[in-house]
Image 1: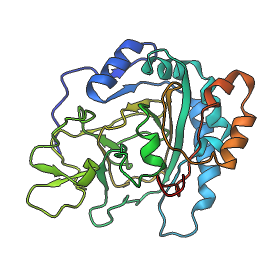
Image 2: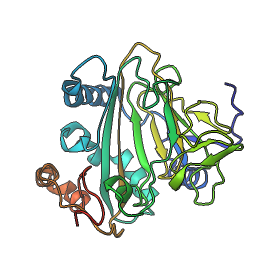
Image 3: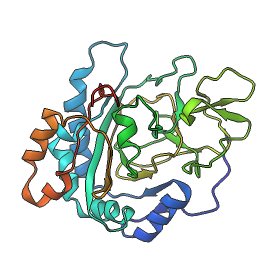
Length: 292
């Protein structure tokens, strides 16, 4: 599909903090070029393989996500001491004290089709969820004002199961793509006149494939809508990400901090402890009003 080039700049160097924040706030995303070194990329790739690789039990499972990757990966935890990344995280939060919000890693094998096997792609969606009872941990952490900081360690392209986004879709009053309507809760959208099933076609009006090299940082806002291409390449697609919220942000009702998160907090060195004192971990079974 041909896409119309954007008329504004969205790729930056790591020291262009104002431009990074302005683009993220105005358009819902930004890309920072070559933030990680080759050695850091390889170490993180090895960690994704080490942590998630053993979870593959048979050949029918081609994609696995770990929703608390940093708790298992000391290499990922080292990113909290990586000054170029932390300067960006701080600037995105107005220079105020910040807290680790969440982390994740994805291991996607060639042939992975995401959630929509028939079309071969992952349905368009937003990570944001409404706080409507009963809601889960994802809704809490994705309503924290924290932008995702994501590294596609093997690069992102339509060929290797990479990301696509809808620029400017991150505002509460975004009307959706032309010719489409929102599914309940605005989690996704569907073509007008068709069944209200999340749309999977990688031709949504206004979409932009995210083209990055290993070492690039992809930033996107909580509400930014995105889709994922089918993986038609030959190399496993490995990625990991994290987010930081303002330490002053109140999250509301929460789950008890999991034991794995407690061990992670206790293991953090003193110089990073201020970043994890408010870390909640992740409990996928928790539901508001049911587990409180």
